[in-house]
Image 1 (cartoon, rainbow, N blue to C red):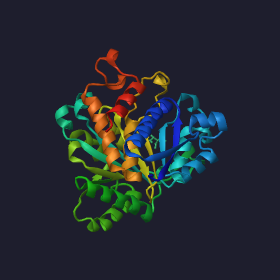
Image 2 (image 1 turned 120 degrees about the vertical axis):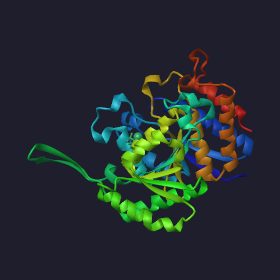
Image 3 (image 1 turned 90 degrees about the vertical axis):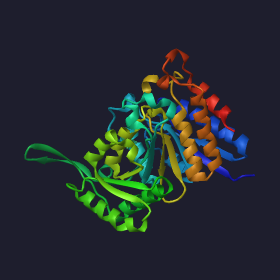
Image 4 (image 1 turned 180 degrees about the vertical axis):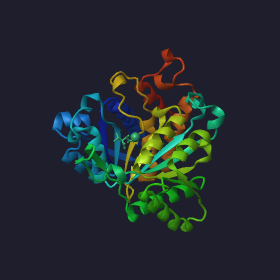
Length: 358
Ligand code: IPM
Ligand code: MG
């Protein structure tokens, strides 16, 4: 008998519960096919936790996540909570869970699926061969620096501080180098070193550790230039490593290159094998509860979990192959369908992918 892996499941808000249900079918199918054993525990988080428990990140949710081997997250947030005070916003829960679980590294791959290359707003010849990974620092920088208001000469002032220390930069940069070593061995470190002190420190650290990874070709790219190069020559990027806010912005841009944000998975990692896995897309409240959501990003997040946390590479491959096979056979959910009348529902797509796994 394989060791039982504990997975904390956060279905969350909007389409979260629907896409997570399909990912759970994949877990079940993996148990049948490979003899692995998963124990899932559903916990409240985000908007639904605000409604039911009065806080986006309840203590017991955190406890279950901390004692699990991995967390699977659907999506959180929605207009219902958008005008709430800061403590009662799903986003605050998201930042809290990242910090509490020590998830300093956020991996967001952007891959063009061959059969969907016309879905992008960019010309297919520009996109040809694009397969990149944004490695975003997730627990530091301006997101977590001191924030306050004060009276100034021009009226009220608002202050957000951006702080990075050497250790925070070094651990994410090393991880990015290691990821690059397993890919096409190219790393773009993105900063704003011509203006920001945190970026100058960032660049110093990158240059100090770079000689330890002589097989990786390194380039420093200023963030504004990177935003441009992503549209101009996306396929020339392999791994991009950057600080929290630049990574937030660039990863959305990179996701849109693929034209199919409903297809992209992500992983948030800390020091050990523990990770939180979630689709890149949001909670899409406008289509929630209608069976219209594309479950593929969440299903591919399970594949990432298998590979990065459990080391179940074969099962991860099986999921990815099944997704490719189902897409190649022409099956589509509404977001990626040309003929919407032929589109599959969320659960039909999940069933087909589970059945295609071997
Ligand atoms: C993301 C999101 C979050 C972020 C928001 C919802 C707080 O945009 O995960 O990219 O900015 O990190
Ligand atoms: Mg974002």
